[in-house]
Amino acid sequence: MANATGHDTLYIGLGNPYRQDDGVGTYVVRALAADPRPGMQTAIDIGDSLQLLSRMQGYRSVMLIDAMKAGTSPGLLQRFDGHGNRWRDAAFAVSSHVLGLGEAIDLGRRLQNLPPDLTILGIEGQQFDFGIGLSPAVRACADTLISELTARHSVPAA
Amino acid sequence: MSTRRIEVNSIARLEGEGSLKVRIEDGMLRTVQLNIFEPPRLFEALLRGRHFQEVPDITARICGICPIAYQMSSVLALESALGVDVAPELHDLRRLIYCGEWIESHVLHIAMLHLPDFFGVPDGLSLAEAHPEIVQNALRLKAAGNQLLRVLGGREIHPVNVCVGGFYKVPPRSAFDPLRDELAWGLDTARELLTFASSLDFPVFTNDWELLALQPATEYPFNGGPLATSTGLHFSVEEYDQHLMEFQVPHSTALHSRRRTAENAAPLQLGPLARLRLNHDRLTPQARQAADAAGVRPDENNPFRSLLARAVEVVFACEEALRILDDYRMPKVPRATVTPRTGEGFGASEAPRGTCHHHYGVDENGLITSARIVPPTAVNQTAIESDLHRYLSQNLDADDETLRHGCERVIRNYDPCISCSVHFLELDIQRG
Image 1: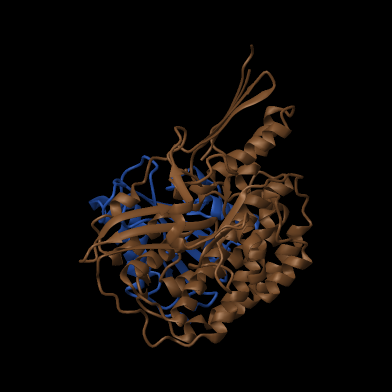
Image 2: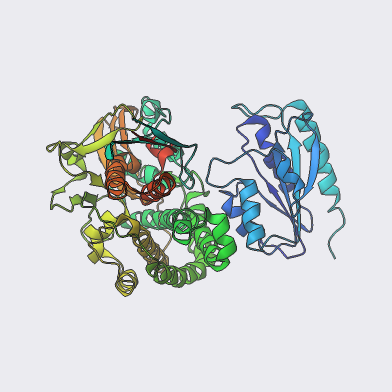
């Protein structure tokens, strides 16, 4: 468990780095973890989707970063309010382990224990085959996102 | 002759894919086939030629829910083949990580997969809306189990710290500090869950299959120990093949199992009810007391009440984990020294779904020459089909929707992990 205050933002990277672009969420959050900033908490390899809920507990602000396969341009970044419904129409990869991301968030909503500020950042992937490494457009988007998220924490927390 | 055909694309709340074919002719039940059409996963062939120390990391990949079972059975078999003795403190740590797996797997099945059947709701999400406190507690309990896997196994899914001889690294006592209070809470919560579950309305249904489980000398079973059956048979893990054999049926890519000497013998049943029958006196004190208070008897023979046996085992796993943590001193050596040699070894452990048996051959360089893995769900297939046959025979007059729902419940009693056994479920009922 992270040692965090409720005022920190938790960034959670989802996906499988051994399925190419599916691992873009973990790529982004690994980079954030390598350059820690005040007010920033990170988590990857959270286990199964049900663990997502317990991992988010205590945080007011959580960002989930995951690959998408919605048929848009590779490397396109989309932002969704986790409390809204628009992200449900987006194609996030399904999990083979009991519950997927959507069901886990649905469960959190029904249990009324989602963080107040829950953002889902989806990056359109191109290659989801076996193997490591991101395709160029996805990597470029991920690197821009890393800079943007890091910049949010450039000022030490009060 | 008219034929009624019902298809369900997938039966919910199971791990894996397959189908059920039911044929009813002139009011008589003719065929019940649990069709597992998951492609063969070829793990046994994949292991051949690999170094013995790679085996627990490869077998862990057989299942995301019960990787410890595959790791433990494989290291036990390989330690037997290589003549390795594992220190008692490492044996306790192996029990500890298994406690984590039983907690996370059993609680997931009870709360998210099995309980919805008893509340008439379609899934765990609906149960969360109707009974949020149950699901909240279950998620927290499951998280405690997962945390045990993380601390001791390096991560929650497909842990990476188990090796032949012990562990790659053993944690300091302080690593478990945050877990002690959580498991103490978990023990109380598990007892409450059992009490609550005992008040559920269970269908009236019994079977009389041959129950099989490990039966160690003194402990409730996790790792190793001779095997025992409800018919009084006792045999060692090494003698497994003398008593049980696998065989192929056309409708399943997972091998069935039966007693070698008795082709028409009752099906074999593995899992919590079998363990409880054969090891009730080995339960930890609070678990036995909780089972007695909840009216869970050692001779339970209603597969629907397997939910209660699982709940008893969650109490046990929390209690056992706390005992091990209380006694824990960081071992000086994390693993025994292992020297390659030619050998053959057998190992078995109790996966949440039942006994998981492994058999390996190793050459003088420590490379695997042969591998055979018998997953518990594969063995349970015949018992599931037999339960389905009995259930359908007793309810032939019911409408198709009732039968479909009933069959799903019968199957879920076994918490089948079809991805392990090779996945589930399309239901096809034909009435002539």
